[in-house]
Image (cartoon, rainbow, N blue to C red):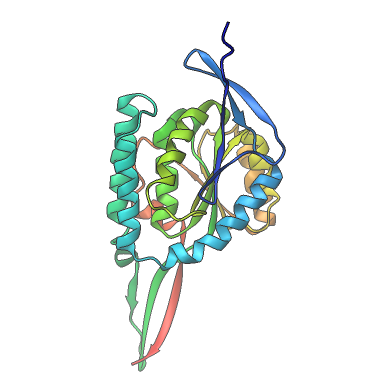
Length: 265
């Protein structure tokens, strides 16, 4: 009798497929068989955020046109993937194309030339907040993951996305697409495991600039605890709607900050 080879789904950090430093896994039933999903630890989060911080300046410096090309390439790769149901993949592809189109337009839309009653020119432009933790709603599946990573990437941020073990199979397919769509390593990292454990570790991490979380992804009491803990660390928390509707300019602007520049006329 042949012994089946059990699959272990790795995480995606710095453009590489990695196991948890703790060696922990979670058993998940998928397609009639059991797969093992890496369960990220606090050390894994620390390593991921350090990598995000190193990768973010380079991603911010890329032109909006180039960022759009890369997100469009992500859509191309997902189009040919077998992750999830065809309708789910199609929705995720359409969402990536939507956000790819915003990359070279959002800065012009949100920037302003400010009137000044002096011999100066004053203008405001948007810049990324920096390193973001993404918590899409588990029930949104692949679409929620693509929406979250695109919202962060469009604005020039680097992000670590938390995915529950129940969605690890779809996340694995997404990670394969990320690895082949020219996205620089570290711009989007994916950690799998227990959402509450990972969010609790993020609360205590002082080098995370913002938490982007879909409403209902975690119990309301946990959402409140995240807001309280983040306030102590001067960390921004954005509770957003689920992924049924794509984020528009107003929502995209939340993952940016305004920089005002004065120049002599």
